[in-house]
Length: 203
Image: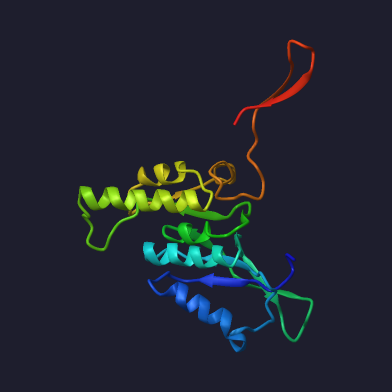
């Protein structure tokens, strides 16, 4: 349930973050609280390694975990059980974190959350035309596998690497980053030539 303990995925994503994630899940002594069978993974990350982020996203999807991005995260204060204390303020999921986040089976971007995208770049800066084309295909294939619209990659490609574009709640739903609530579609009621009523929605 929503009140069950969640996993806080916090910090920069590296090439081996998926392996560390798997080790954490396997080591019950590393958990402060007993985790449910399919815990929600809550994110607070400025990004990191693109390949590592996709590997983490695959690890999350393989286990059918859900993901969450909220502005703040709280935990039950001890010893005053029942009282909450905020442990993370102004959380965000930006850059490569976006790729890890969409690995969630059910993905929620809470109102006022900061989900940021921009062009993905290499430490070597100029990848060259051939490598860039391959990278775009790999990213597009990954997003399609996760059920996210290709438009997310197109939108990110228009944002310079040193800047950030923050998606609105409606954009997150329209692009299927948030798949908990369908985006609003135009609809109308009509009738067939035989007089049978039907509902038409615009996708």
